[in-house]
Length: 371
Image 1: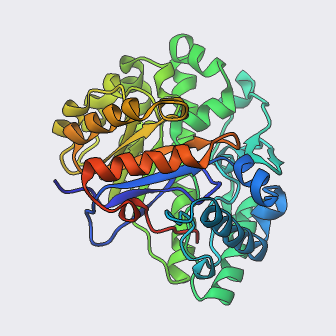
Image 2 (image 1 turned 90 degrees about the horizontal axis):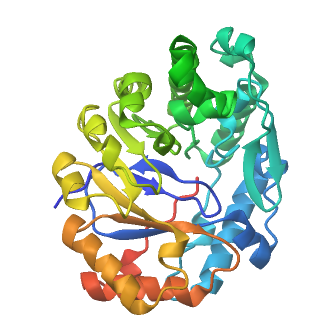
């Protein structure tokens, strides 16, 4: 059973992003996501603003995180080779970048992901929303500066930013009022969703274009629909699908991050986006139906911590058996795990998967990629 060409990539303490395997396909891999506080408790990670603005500090931090993972998991070596880590763009401003372009200030924390300060737009400000002047925006200028620094030091500027999704960012801009707009002010809802969509496309093409000049070409995009479960299938089709379709048409390869929730209500609509290369979802979803709807996608179940942490081996084994019977070789995401997570629980999960899929446990570990 083949996999799509897009794969999940979790840069240690970062949020989920994606990259491309040019050969396509690949065996089962388990991607583990640790929250920043896991690293803060073990190696003194400072994930504050300097981490996001200084490519050298970020590179050294990634290498230190790799060493911390290898100490905690000597057999799995989840950190790979710390000395192979180079500078890159991954995780700059976390998931907060796109909303920040509209004035939603980024708040940083030493042991947490960057977040936008909650300042929902008024009706008037929403109606006046326009695509920002990206070329003149200080955050974009800083990104371009960092690309130049990284290119000069390491020869190319790889790595992935998290551009989020149309609904996610519209929610960050408008707050809960967005869902009222869907019912009472549909024209206003379409306006903010459309502006966000155009901004995402313009921003990603701008960054991709500069990365291409710095030796790295990207032709893919995965949109994040983390809050889609707050709206109905009908509202998804009416208000979000048109913009997801526009995103899909703007890149050669496309995927959808549905987050760790049940995807069943939206699966048929996602199938209308064309041949997805990637789709993730919660384990309560109808897995055989997803396999039938998306035969060429990298189907990736996301296991929330409560599905694994504190569970006995038999429960974990049954969950993995259901995934294997329905999806075969796939990518599995385990996270986000916080500082309370015991190493043995993670190692036990890998051992159960190794026994079930009959592959050495080391082969279940994806190659770290922290550029």
